[in-house]
Image 1 (cartoon, rainbow, N blue to C red):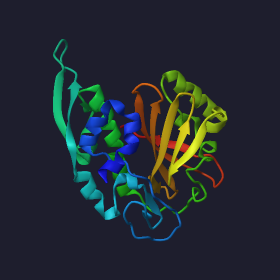
Image 2: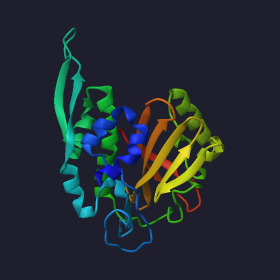
Image 3: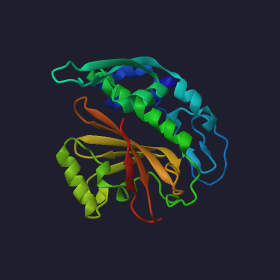
Image 4: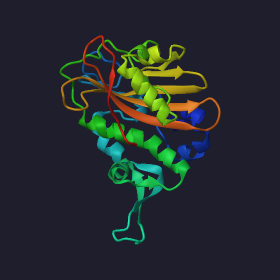
Length: 271
């Protein structure tokens, strides 16, 4: 099963492939439906939906009751992390705190405190694995939505017509500014970049291709994530370039205020 989960990752994380394999990232296909019925969670390839809450099989979770166990399961390779605290007195020496991230619980405890992996390579891997940790934590808090404006929305070839331009490739502050301006003008991602090509790569998973880049979008969790009663989508974005080893991972909470409107970015998580 772990071999299958590494296939997609190898394509865009060449620089850290060996390390990822050691840590056993979850990379199998996303299997979800949203039929409003209570279904029993089963193995990959079957529905993972309970009471209107759906989650991706990339979370490697058979049941919502298994979340605590998943959060406590050790990584197959721990991260040596540190944070720098400024000196309390003028001309004093900065203090370096060291710690170890061993599982999702320690990631979720240490990362908000500013702890980072020491090397650039491990920092990228830490964020890659951390996205799953945050998703598990958010799924644990997710409730069945009272209002579902996403019932007719699907991650398919038409999805970029409903997405914000800010889900596109970000390489600089200029990219952030021009995409934010496009959103203010009411443009969708497809409006902003009409030449992008979108293909379905699995249930609740698409690939968006542009000029020299690819972004893979995975619907991690569907449900009420923030307690406002409205259906949200926890969306993972993995981006890489056709050439080189640059890659990034981002995690968003998207929501919708009407059954036909665009999805808006309610939150981007710090990884």
